[in-house]
Image (tube, rainbow over all chains, first blue to last red; front, top):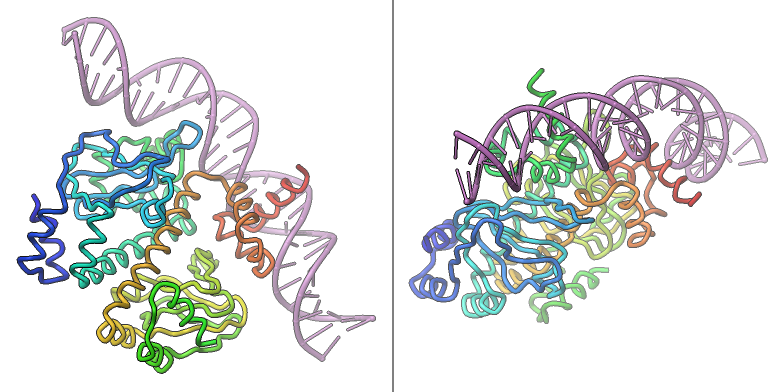
Length: 191
Length: 191
DNA sequence: TTGATTTATTGACAATCGTCAATGAACTTA
DNA sequence: TAAGTTCATTGACGATTGTCAATAAATCAA
């Protein structure tokens, strides 16, 4: 399992033995059970994560209702950037949708990695560029498409999420209520 | 004007003379007139930008209507990440809201900078972390707040944008029609 | 300053969406 | 299997929003 992370990194950088060993020693893999939290509102984020298997959901708690903003899957990096980089209390929760295997990059470890192996900066740049591209796309979807179109986009590009995640979480992720999503689905079927 | 970019970088990295000269020589400052485009839909993004003065608007063209997704201001980096990093046609436009002074980081120049001064990777990481934090926040606003709340947030945090930008662009940025924003404003006044 | 153009507001109406409550379906657990 | 729990669907209704058209206000250019 560990080497899935290494494998991912190797796509962009030819790691040497020293680097690989350092990663294996300093980046633990933890098993997170369904519903378990990696980060809660108000906590300082002390790490970012890499999803080896499973799904991590990011959400906000608004008036007692969980509003999902993102699903992180296999080979995705997960971070509450504001809390992690500024070391301020997190506004969101990170929670496992199902039992997941997660690589934990502690903030101290990250500093050590970057100090000892500066070329890892390249990796973080690549990872972040990817993420920025995804977020820009996501924001554009909110501004340019209605809920039905956003749902159809999900059906087309991430059908597995629809199988693994309760519909009420998909609904808030699309920015609508669960009832509205249910009606959107009915309308699509009948057309 | 050039040294505003240098000054920004100096906040994070103590640049030496060689680095400063390299930047001055290789990162031109261009004057962009109001309404002028830095990037159009369908084009390959060959550069990213740094706003020295002015405002750059990012938008999509949907059924003939411009849907704004972002306003970049002084000291902001501007990039269509997908087009720039993957070198594929851009989905969005980048256009000056008013006459602006823009530093242009050509893709070739960026490669040269990073090769010659690897510690600039650190800078790109810091810039991107900031941006990711902003985008995460923005997505959360779409999911957790209604249009009125998003408008009030703008009034509180970016009042200058409301003075400089036509209301119909603010409207699509908030994800509503210009008429709806007008009514939101009336409602707020009367309360 | 005046006229032309652009931008913002308002009204009317239809479409969409959120909320609350009830029902039905699916999944758990004993 | 049966009962309990969670999740998805549906109906009713009110609130919000989009659209189209008209008007008012603001901006720009001659």
